[in-house]
Amino acid sequence: MTGPSLCGSSDQRGIALVIALLAVSVLSALGISLSLVVNTETRIAGNFSGAREALYAADGALEIGAQELLAVADWDLVLSGRALSTFVDGDPTGLRPLGDGRFVSLSEVTDLANSEPRPWGANNPQWRLFAFGRFSPAAYVIVWAADDTAENDGDPARDGRGVANRGSGILCLRAASLGREGAYKVLEATVRRSLGPSGEPVHEMLSWHDVR
Image 1 (cartoon, rainbow, N blue to C red):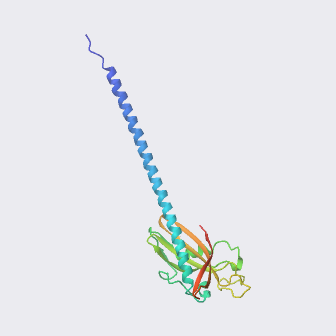
Image 2 (cartoon, rainbow, N blue to C red; image 1 turned 30 degrees about the vertical axis):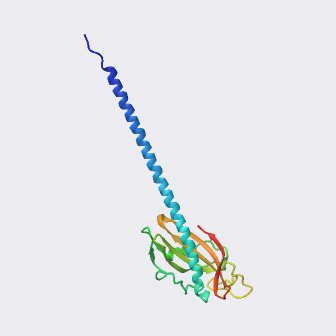
Image 3 (tube, rainbow, N blue to C red; image 1 turned 45 degrees about the horizontal axis):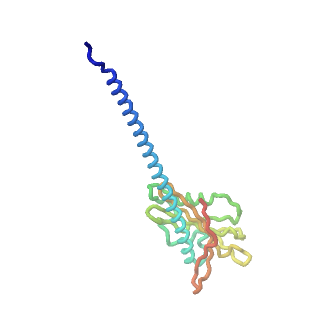
């Protein structure tokens, strides 16, 4: 007599092994997908946080620049680059380290700002460094000042005088914030100096806009 056939048991074990391998493959694929999703979401959250931080730093830098302008009696000194804010970390030249190990050249970013289109011709702003330094451990800020675009004297290094000059007593400020992971924010504002209720000098933000 012959014993019972074992073919059915072998087939079942083979099918079970295939099912187990498929299950492992599916679970591995799900694990990899979940890991990619988590990593992507983490990067998105980090980029969003860095962008918001850069925005707040640039806005704070504008306020610093506007407040510091009040201490300069003759704004021609600012427009010609002869007067700087007290918020500086050295000479207005050379490289500055950023929070993520990169460096920024003050001269290069100034040249870049001044290389933008010139829709106002001779009255186009000529950005001069005014304030620069670390705003927070992760953000380095730079503030430039320039003559108001409403000027009509054709001299960007001089604040126009006289009633006929609509830009008299008004300057433009440009603030850039360089943050983590390449975060970069640029804001511009138009500032006018006036007198407060007690006769003290105060600044008015006439306009504020997001450049990039």
